[in-house]
Length: 357
Image 1 (cartoon, rainbow, N blue to C red):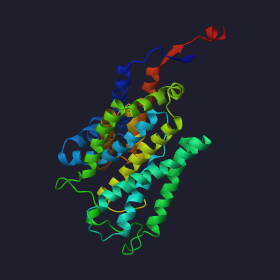
Image 2: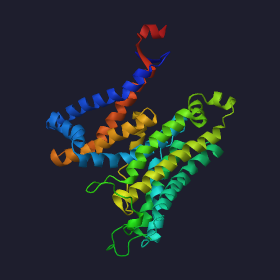
Image 3: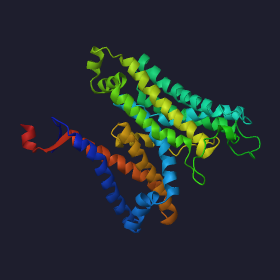
Image 4: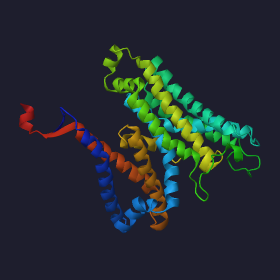
């Protein structure tokens, strides 16, 4: 009989090695899957993990994909550190895109240079408004923030579909669902000719640095850590638990909303029924893979972005299904949680006779 017993002390080295081991075992598992599909394992793994890092154009695409993952992952890591489980970042991402894009929809001929900063602020506001719903229900009625935030994802998706197929549909779009293309003043500036690397990506790479400084060098960061690790001690020390819940959820919603409007104003340039490949859910993997540390989230966002670009390469060059990308991300999460379990718990074999006595 197997029994899990908590370890008396946790190794910080093991905690940081856990993501590396998860990636290694994911690659080994991937090789077995490719061989089962009768694909050359070495070549396919190269297409998946190495090829996206070999050219400047593919590196640009990795950076573009990593941007929303990093932003959402930073927001989620703040909440997860505080023990507030915001699983609805996908809905907050969509609401951020909706709020911010409303300016481009209603002022589609604008050339005002301030429209883009205003859209970014509205995007942050939209994500925070959507995150305020589970925060209110959690603090007033002690509802489960996991279920509430998750259900709001589907409400946000339906709201997006309603708007792009109804009031916001492009009257010159031949009946296809989608808004007008945003004016040039409402689009993220591209930084290099011939590449899609844009100003929003730079913002996404700067946010983890700012977040790390705040979380590690400020009283707010200390309060977040204490509230997440010892809620009772935090309460006795004067930390307001309801305030921490509000801050954690609003921070996650704000970063997700910012990611949504940056994506809408950069790579898409309009609103469509589908504006995300699941960034809000994938960012959960990014947050845990990065050990809930902004520096780790930055690196983890790049790694997961590689799986997106590598999955597209493997689909085109090796004929693998697109679902392999989601499969690999799921395998990463599985091994990560498994190694985390072994980091915090010890597996003991107990005989039935010993257990009965």
